[in-house]
Length: 366
Image (cartoon, rainbow, N blue to C red; front, side, top):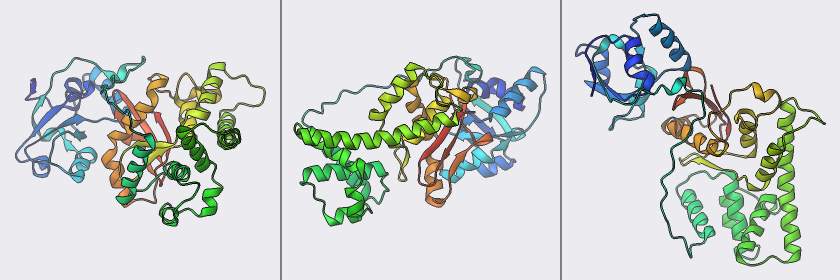
């Protein structure tokens, strides 16, 4: 493994380690504040804001050598949230370093790459689910969350109620209604509850003609609300009645009316999820094949349409500990990452907003 025993300037560290996202171990001078604060050494990835990367690129090309602060994403074990946050936010000074050992890798400056990116292929595991019913798995998962005092998202409540209604002759135990904090009237008038009711009935047997009409009615009410959300976004994009819209986009949106499902994006105690409004907001603004109107001027993801959801999940997973800490201590405040706090992943910096209840409001490439 290569070592640096001198020239710990910001520019040299960027050139040898930071720009290629190389994992490095930083050994500190015995008398330094970093040694007192973090111990003999720490291992991690140097973290830069987009602005810092651009500035270092220029100063490196100009032959400059300066000292300064290093922010690190800690990759060691046995340290808690506060230790990691201190390294990320306060960091240490380059003149406190006595040696750097870094892991050699191919020279691949992902930050400069402007073409299409690809996510790693998922590892496929063959699982035999024959004889296992979806509703049993779902209900078991939901009750585990409830028994662990974890908050459910609204869609989970509606689906649970729909399944129970289908399995119990349209009746619900009073204790269940109390658990999910809905009144009987709210349950009876909720289109999504009855959508999931008929979906469950359809799993068990063929629907009657009357049931098919009722099922279609509730799907229609849900889709009408989704169409309204789409047209709201069209207006924000500057489109007006009579403007042409690409057939491929129309086909995509029609497909999502039926196929999109509100769901959690990462699995932590406080639900972090997206709904149809989140989905449309992000995709019409920042997915290059779907951008419309004045949204064409906005930044776009460097990934294919089929990779966007997985990308969002990966970026949020990078924030797992931050999100847990935020919602344990600041449940009434929005969670944001912008500017120098944007989330770095594979050459890109991502900004995002998540509401106080955990709904993803937006995410985009800086």
